Length: 197
Image (cartoon, rainbow, N blue to C red; front, top):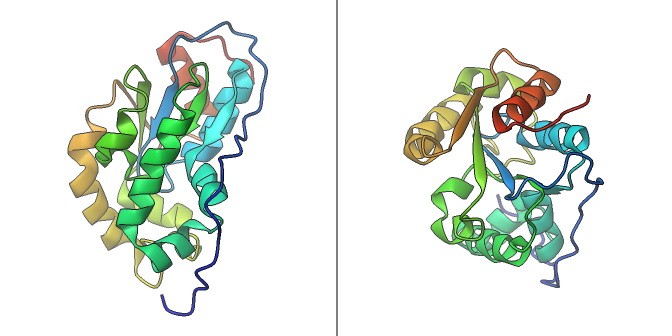
């Protein structure tokens, strides 16, 4: 992990939200959780667009705030600093209620970050480590916990560690056999939201 330039400034968050409400207020944010490669960002964008809600990719907001990629942030500052920033960014975005948020795989274990959205409707996008590893393929450079290692054993360990937290989600959708569009439609159905693809 050496050789990563540790530059970057911590500035104010530039919120990147898109979409206009067409399905009425949801009352609380929809937070998508799960292992990396579960489809949180892709499904989140589709769900938000289909329900006319803004979308936030929390990892992207963390990168904007830090001025570094997640990989650089892990390499330069460590996972603890990343989790601290994850909590800070979550709290800064907390006033948003009618929004779909895709969070990082470890967000559910970050109790400070979770406090930002105590009323959130949390949806666990479940994926098996084998399917997640296939989806990731050789694209591990942007995934700090997988850089330079065999993905599947790491994903198996992460799932074992995070399973109790993921199990606290109010809703679960198994994404192993579902494409992103069908996953988004299923979430909308579970939450009673009007969804148009």
